[in-house]
Image (cartoon, rainbow, N blue to C red; front, top):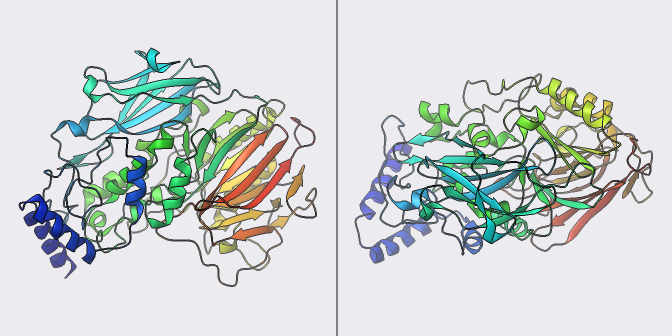
Length: 550
């Protein structure tokens, strides 16, 4: 029955493509009302992209399939018997200049030494055979970097769609320095971006304070609008962004009436990337792998071997971003580390490559992961970072799934596997304790949780102030969950949650982000509601010994 409905809707869309634009707009409005599911990100994205010429794969004129329809003459029907269900009815044509214009700009730290390199990334919908990057210390002095290492990655194609990701690694830069850049074709100015700018990372051991925006679990629909706007306004206010996994929720592409029958995975990911271009093109956007990066599992994907093959095992996540794993001995974007001033950031995968890892092959009989020996790498990384505390005093670990959460523990706060926290705890906690990790940042649970210093399921209250807002020389890692940026699944409605002694505060009523402000002796974490800017929590971790290890 669903197949018949899908075919009829798709055929209707095809027929609509032949009518006049005025009449089509009226019919499109009717279809929009019929299939409305309160997707409110359109206006927000348009506001941030008003000065851009981005084109993405939402090219159909009609609202039932898409929110944005440019250009209007590129509609096509893609019903394929091999996929049983219709593909997305309207996609970018591989003809026309709009497919070659760079978009989805984003940055990441690069280089063996902090502040000496930057990865500049962008996409096009047609292959650019001569990608290039220009860089300089002023807008007027950007010059072609002929020795830049540029990698081109493409992970998904079908008859009417392809996407190419370019990652240009520029080296030989100075720390904490503003640079201007542009990207695009080395042979055709028409396919070059406008000039933008970024500031490189601060050198390892830099004593100056800095601030990072930290959050997880951000989608593209109504619940994420406030956070999207708040983050886009952070240019010049924070030094970089750390996204703790679940990026765009593209794998939830089928969970609305108007997307249930089609293939919208790529559309949603592209929409997410373009919606944050305002901030991503100016500062590093460091990412952590989450469970929603694993695969596409819409009905269309499950019925297509091609889509399952191309979109499984974290392919989109590993192709779209370029994290500093080569410089830190990590693997792809799954695990890596970097220094920024007084903090060593270690990013790990809570999804793969440890005993009983969840894998996240939800509806397929596939085994994901097998990227490498993550635990051996993690121990080596933490050991080296711990030995370097005289220069870089703090160690912060970023991961997606939490070791401790109200959603996955018993009455005494001991993790269980109702949300797989026990497996994560068994895999990682010994190393976190052994190397005295200061702060563990996590997402996954759609709430904000702040914990007291915790080890082996017990709160270690040494150094915790009476008001619970200052932890001085804590004797165990401090865990924070920041899965509150907003997505289609909403905030988690805890019902009669336990009250473990390690819990300092929980908030599941406000969408927001957190910020981490660091000096050599202080980490201050602030939880902010995105819609109002209201601070709902703030606490500090203090090292009285300065750069010496606790």
